[in-house]
Image (cartoon, rainbow, N blue to C red; front, side):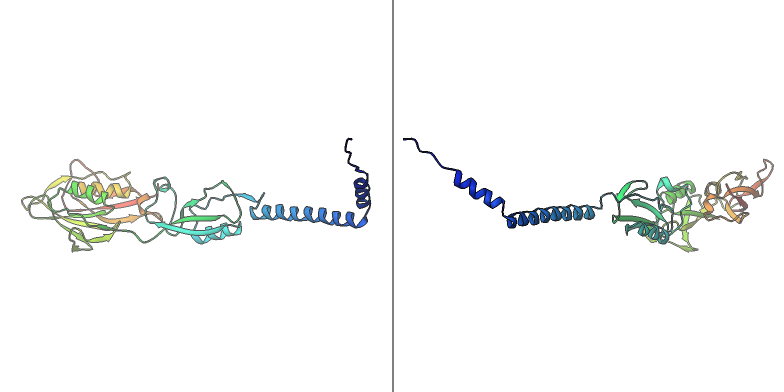
Length: 270
């Protein structure tokens, strides 16, 4: 005889359970609790990731570090100075960036980032790095100038002395400096240059008008001449931007000048 299960009692119990107000009350509380907890979880995650709070990164390169820090913090960023550099990167050399200004930033300008992001800045420092003084003795003046430039040093004056033409001595602030001595990058170096047999050597007066200050000083050095009075007719932050507008004595095929003598220079702006 087949065996049948009687489900009627079970259905009857289920209907009675569903009609119980206490069940629906607990069910409603559980449902609301799940919804509230889910909302809080997603809202918290939204706040944590700062969804929808992205802002455009400002360009602070060229700004003073204090102004840049204030600007970035006002936009909700954290600021950290990671490094400093004395020499400007090549792409910034035509910009008016002073010591204490920002020369590099990460993230870069116009990127979209979230508030609270850490900002890394690099600043131009006024303290030059130290470099080793090269050995210029027995080199020609042209070779000596090239080596100084390669080391980041500046050529000052070529002082004529009796003797052979190569460089005889190298001086820093008027004192003989030995090769390998550490000095600040950008320091000015003078040299003694032999004038040959001890007699004055006459040369043509080079034309300096139109050259930058660095170019003019280099040309004087190549000719064995020295800068005399340097007059700046306009104020400028960087003397390397100055250009020669006048010189004395002026170039003249009929006039000669002795090696080691001075030429006065007047500078103007670009």
